[in-house]
Length: 232
Image 1 (tube, rainbow, N blue to C red):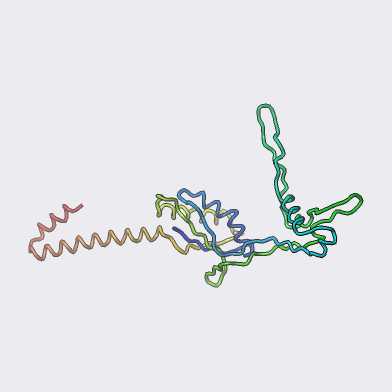
Image 2: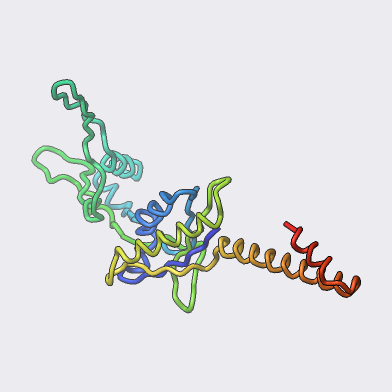
């Protein structure tokens, strides 16, 4: 029902899509009547690990070992429960990577009295962007479009109005250092309101023309006026 173009402001283009998925998308999906928000365009962040096969072989490792160590290092495992009186809270160990540099510090193998082999010793970690499948440009500026889909049965005009207000609030909340700027490209709510206005105008015009025809035919304005007053 609504298409919004979002351009980067105080954020690199390479980080715009990731930021929108983690922040703006979630905020808009909380708006009453919104079913989902889909993104098009932009550059998706991709962390690429390029391994040197000769270095891996020198340490007796293979790509399967590298994949298994990365998977194990980038996962959160349950740590049991913390009991306090009648309250029991599940505990989870945080093992996920928080920074790109942490990936290179992953230990792949180790032996007593020898320095451990870390991922940075056998591979290069690159913080890049995935190849774009679709580019979105407006006025010479590249950005991302958000397609707002409403829930079945929700009022189109009300949903579009609520989403617009949410966008305005979020931009004001960011202030002068806003990371993004938005512009509405398509608004089905405005289309519905324009259609209703046209129908009302056409209805009134039709009644006036009918009354005018009756006046001309009957040569008596009183009877057509009574007919006009009787119309709902």
